Image 1 (cartoon, helix red, strand yellow):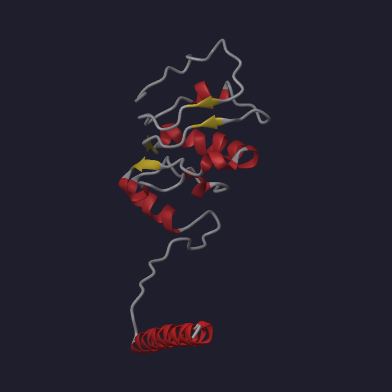
Image 2 (cartoon, rainbow, N blue to C red):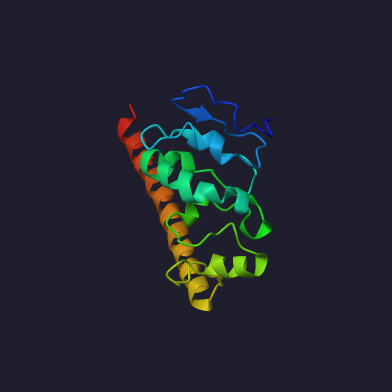
Length: 171
């Protein structure tokens, strides 16, 4: 239930790893993390927190994500934004390698940045799945064939059992 941690909380400590996962942190100070995170020992677990991905957290995309990506990528599985709504529940690793300051934009520019990466290639598309008559026919045929095979298998198994009973009868 930790919702705030002072940037000097670990100032006089030499930590090997830091687990602040599954708390209520919406912001973490750069000084707190990078003081304890070298390129070799960057084992900082911040997953499961409701981060407000604004300009104050841009340092995470610039500094922390690249270090975790190369050293401990499993620590990025559930490192997500919860605000703003356009990117809520989106993994921060999504922006790994982008050149833009993603979190330091206003909303109108932010929507454009979501659909284009630094090279200008569209990365989000709406996919709509509709059923077609051909698909429905194929599913119907597959279901019918599977049902027939199951029935034939049951009948065949019963006949084999009956034959064994006749053979095993003692008069």
